[in-house]
Image 1 (spheres, rainbow, N blue to C red):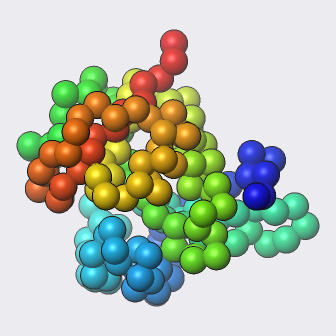
Image 2: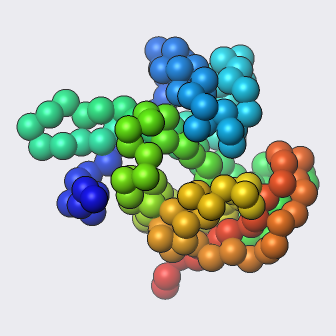
Length: 172
């Protein structure tokens, strides 16, 4: 397995120029399974929603051009009512992400870039971070656990679907 700890990840904001890439990733069977059918309009809506920060995650190998391979977003859970993470302290963030490139799945990249994203959010002042994978998505749950998250609920129904609520708190 690749030593992903030694390889940096870059997060750059999503732009309208990224919409075809996101549409291609959203059409991948391994993404559709957990994110539903692709809708480019939804990506445009999210891009224009000031409550959500959208990121293209790039794998940066020394000597090579950074390779886009994943999508990530973070948001203020207090901006939606109700939200399963509205109990988190002010300044907390919710996160969602997927790996779009199939050859990057099952190589340790998910937990590594999620960990880095969390550390960046904590450094910016977030006291806690929540994520809500589908309870049947064992791969995502294991990646979140490796990134420092712990389950705080069994399966619950949310307006975004069936989820397990997982949280990670900033270490003081």
